[in-house]
Amino acid sequence: MGFDTRILKADEEGIRLAAELLRKGEIVAIPTETVYGLAGNAFSADSARKIYAAKGRPSDNPLIVHIAQLEEVEKLTREFPEIARRCAERFWPGPLTMVLPKSEAVPFEITGGLDTVGIRFPANKAASEVIKAAGSPLAAPSANRSGRPSPTCAMHVFNDLKGRIPLIIDGDGSAVGVESTVISFENETIRLLRPGFVTPDDLREVSDNVIVDDGVLNCVADNARVSSPGMKYRHYSPKAEVIILDGDIKGFEEYIRKNAGKSDCCVVFTGDRLSVENPTMEYGHNSKEQAAMLFSVLRELDKQGFERAYFRCPDKNGVGLAVYNRLLRAASFRVVKL
Ligand code: AMP
Ligand code: MG
Image 1 (tube, protein in one colour):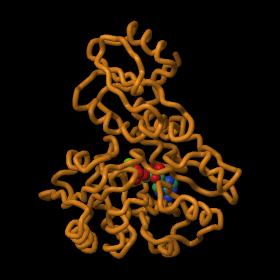
Image 2: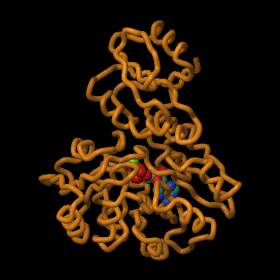
Image 3: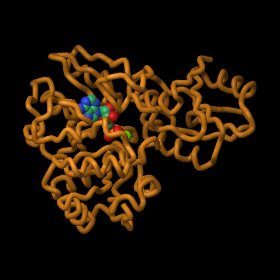
């Protein structure tokens, strides 16, 4: 800590400096197609400690390990089952994390004490170049302070982590905008632990048996042992109280007119016609746009200091399931059925 945090473009000089810092055991923020990641050597317990400290993240919340070549899976796992290979072939590089039995080389500090490791092969060019130049897979959680929304641009990272890390690589914005889909395997069954851009229907192309874990749509108790530890943290919580209004725009309007106070804000779909006195923000026409915009909208709410934010409920299917899953946590599961 106490760093003079630099922001460099993902050019030769930026990649070289990132790799140099990583090889020295430092941690660096890098762009990926999902959200920005805070990366450190995946085989180093010390790097894991630095990541948890910079984020202020509880250390039982495992880190995802990022690779740039398929062969790296062998070093990280004891077993790479056939069904996981089929997922890799279909979705990698891309926004899918697979939970597999970890090898001895991966320290428990990286996996939050679990005997499994989450692995992802990102598609983002800068991410891939940094991993290759660092010469090792990189453990990287989202590069936000714990409890803040995940960062989708370099300035979000800077606002959260300035002074706490030496370098941020500024690449393309995060086109996907929500964190990766996380899955685990039970024989031929795929269990969806966290929804993302890769949807349940996409996964059904690889196996007929796809189960959505209870933690995706339900609140998980603080002391529960869960298959995807991240799901139990409140996460993404803006200062405003978030409330999800589940229904059409007419019902939304009526509810706001009756219930909203002066310092409350409405967040609706782009193109919705809403006629109310409250300030209004938009978060995209469809699920893909909403995934890309959600976290910057949550950050904007914080900046403007609203007391409450009423969100029009996203579609719960496809990529919308990922948007709804994040929003539910931002709302501490407060949903009003209209
Ligand atoms: P992120 O906050 O994007 O770094 O994602 C980390 C999340 O991925 C964790 O909070 C877990 O929900 C999930 N995850 C990572 N590794 C594992 C693992 N070994 N087992 C289960 N879930 C994991
Ligand atoms: Mg995160």
